[in-house]
Image (cartoon, rainbow, N blue to C red):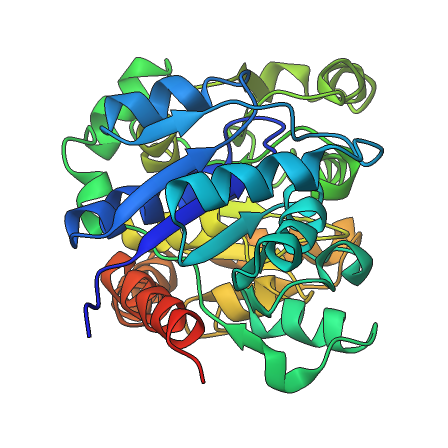
Amino acid sequence: MNDKLSILQVITQRRYSGAERICLTLCADMQRRGHRVLLLCKPDGGMPDEAKKLGIAVQTPAISGKLNLLAPFTIARIAKEFGADVIHTHLSSASLWGGLAGHLAHIPTLAHVHALNTWLYYRFSTLSVTCSAGVKQHIVNQGAAEARVRVVYNGIEATRLDGVISSSDARRMLGLLPDQPVVGCVAHLSAKKGQEHLLQAVALLKERFPQLVCLLAGEGEMYDTLRRMAAELDIADRVCLLGFRSDVISVMNAMDIVVLPSVAKEGLGLVLVEAALLQKPTIGSNAPGIDEAIADGVTGLLTPPGDATALAEKLALLLENAELRQQLGKAGRTRALELFSMQGMCNRMESIYHELAFRG
């Protein structure tokens, strides 16, 4: 039996972010393992260019949109022409149409649920894979059959940190003092990510930590709102809205504490794993997904979602205790290498591909 497969990866990306990076990583890794890979995606968002840089074959057919009734026929046709053994879909539209395409083409499908999404769009798949146990429980609660859902944690290649500049150099790059307390969040600027609660927490700490600086890396619809909020809280001089940064790992290395104060729909919080690899202590909302990325009291601290006062207390605890920060950061890296390795994620996914391709 030839164990080398033809794998069709399908994604309807909105921007180049977590799910998109995981999709491309799987494409590249499976190709290195000797499998044939073809990626279908939207023509925008920079993803086709990133795929081509990695040597991945890519097509950009019209497959997006929840009302695009031609999409499943398009995907089915391409899958049969490619000779796909498995169709792996990412995000809701791709999973809706890819699942139906699998039925049309008689090809098994794997729907990848990257966040706390609506099960309706993934229900036509042969199997589903979720990025956390919290996401699995979320879709099982909506009617997904537990036996048809697998958990595969997102993986991060440790070498992704190769070449990252030192903490002191990162601080100089951003105009920060060597001993200045620095906290921050790396995420899309949206209400569900909870950056406003981080700003409220910083405002509560401004007298206790006069030199405290908060870095917000990312772009999104909340940019102007957060800028106004910083001014209203009288902390505009200590909040840096950095916008999109291609060197976001280096930006995180300038922080003493990395925070993800999400209030809703967080699949895993990949940035928390990246921070752990940098040996940074983390604080996150006590919500499904995040509570798997952070081992509370071991690698970081959890706080109730939307509770700025509780967040301020946790920040103060860590800012005043360098030894605890170091202890959490060291434990975080060890755990990240054990649970969230790229090799482990790709091994598990390859096993599921074989299960689908060679089932009964």
